[in-house]
Amino acid sequence: MEQRNESLLDRPAVAAPQQPARRSAAVVQIREIGSRYREHIVRHLLALDVRDRYLRFGHAASDEQVRRYVESIDFKRDNVFGVFNRELELIAVAHLAHPPKTAPEQRAEFGVSVSGPARGRGYGAQLFERAAMRAVNAGMQTLYIHALSENTVMLHIARKAGARVERDGSESQAYLSLPAASFRSWFSEVLTERVARVDHWIKREAARARDALEIVQEIGDGVREAARMRQQGS
Image 1 (spheres, one colour):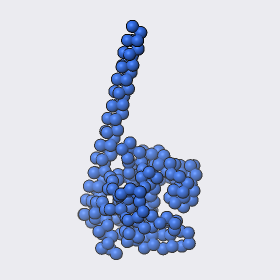
Image 2 (cartoon, helix red, strand yellow; image 1 turned 45 degrees about the vertical axis):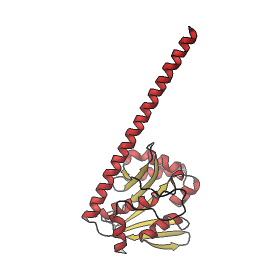
Image 3 (tube, rainbow, N blue to C red; image 1 turned 180 degrees about the horizontal axis):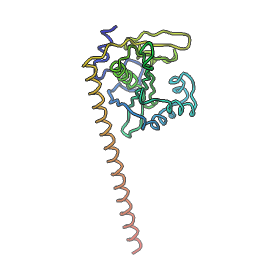
C-alpha cells in the first residue's frame, strides 16, 4: 500500500476516478484559501441543495448550522482548498482538519463539497489528492474520512487512493495510511500552490478586464443614445 500511496502523492495532478459523470474529467488549479474567504465558503455551501448538504455534513444542515461550521474553521491550524471558476466563484471546497499536536495519533480529517453544475469533472478526487499532499508534508500519519455509506462517490475516491474503508451501518470510515514527507513531496506542494496562485491571479485580472469592458460598452451605449436623442430633438 505504501508504494501505491507514494505514486498518488508524488504526482502533481492525476485523472479523476472512473465514475458516472456528466462531463469529462479535467485538471484544475487548486489553491489554499484563508480566513478572508469565509463568506465565499458560506455562499458555496448555502448554494448546495438539501441532498448535497446531507452528504457533506451527515445531516440536512440548516443555513445557520452551515454558517456556524464555517465560522468555526481554524485557519491557523487547518487547511482549506478551493476551486474557482472564471468569475472567481468557489465551485468546490475541501477542508483538511488537523488534530491537536498532543493527539496520540496524527490523523487529519477530510471533507469536500462540489457545486451541482461542476459535478463529474473529477474535482473531488483532485481536492483529495491536494489535501493528502498537505497532510503528508504536515507529518500526518493517516488521512481520515467520515461519510455516509450512501456517499458512494466519496468512498470510491478513497478506495481508489488505497484507503481502507470500514462500514458501520449507515456510516463509513475511510483510512488512508500516508508515507513520510520527502523533498519531492515538499517540492510538489510548493509548485502546485505557486501555479494555482498564478492561475487565480490570471482569473482575477481577466474578471477585472471584463468589468472594465462592460463599463466602456455602457458608456459607449450612453453616448450613442444621447447623440440619437439630440438628433431627434433637432
